[in-house]
Image 1 (cartoon, rainbow, N blue to C red):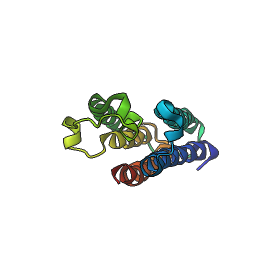
Image 2 (image 1 turned 45 degrees about the vertical axis):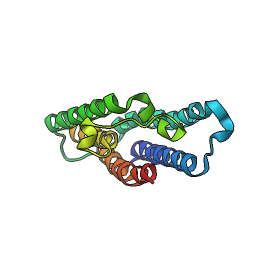
Image 3 (image 1 turned 120 degrees about the horizontal axis):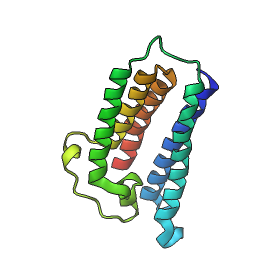
Length: 164
């Protein structure tokens, strides 16, 4: 692993930690109450900034020498396409409010159907598919590391916090 892999990995862990902590503290302690009608905007600004930093940092992986023996562009493209399909299907159900956990700020919970009847957390599954797809497509081990971090951080930690 190189610094070019470590920076995105660290930022992904930070993004998941900030998002999880923000949601948990809002649910249990209503930490954004002091911001009144701007609470959701403050939360959105905080989580968006760390997620954007992570996404931008993934470009560093292309400078890394940490690689698999071979890439499989066909399989990678298929996995990325599956992730995109899952993401679009889920986004049609939850919209922007779902992306930023607006339901913890008083937004009405949507009646979820479609992809949500087949996958409990389709957005998180989509992210993992994208990252595994990028690893397979490019042969870059850094993307596989990110997929492991995302699978655990989103599907285990974040999903549990949102559920409780």
